[in-house]
Image 1 (cartoon, rainbow, N blue to C red):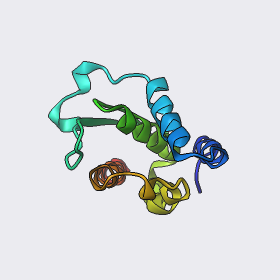
Image 2 (image 1 turned 90 degrees about the horizontal axis):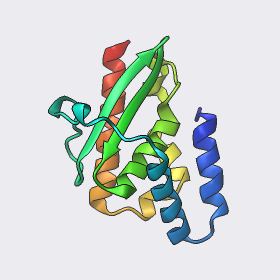
Image 3 (image 1 turned 180 degrees about the horizontal axis):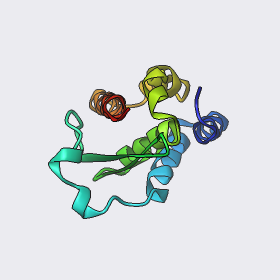
Image 4 (image 1 turned 45 degrees about the vertical axis):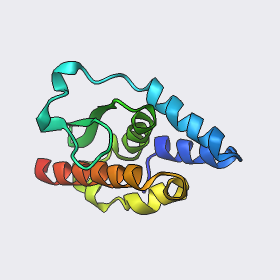
Length: 136
């Protein structure tokens, strides 16, 4: 059920043998993401439960979910980019059906993220799922 953009990331990470190379790739994904305008870095878009500052600004266009995101930590920006690849363009009604834990597990992130980063990633997924559920 993953998007092609997510499948492309999964394929690239699978190709990279060394976790350090994978980590660098995740950071590069974050660097390639457009920054969130400072006017949207407000409490309404802030994700609680993350060790870093994280903002997710959801949008729906033609019934499809999308969001902009940003963080003050580069690895977290990369995680936001991965979540964007997983959820962007998905019909709003299907966002909650995506098994994010299983999809992200395919990337091997669970074994290489700190407990705080893993908690933050779950908080971002929860925010996306909750937001999409209220946007239907």
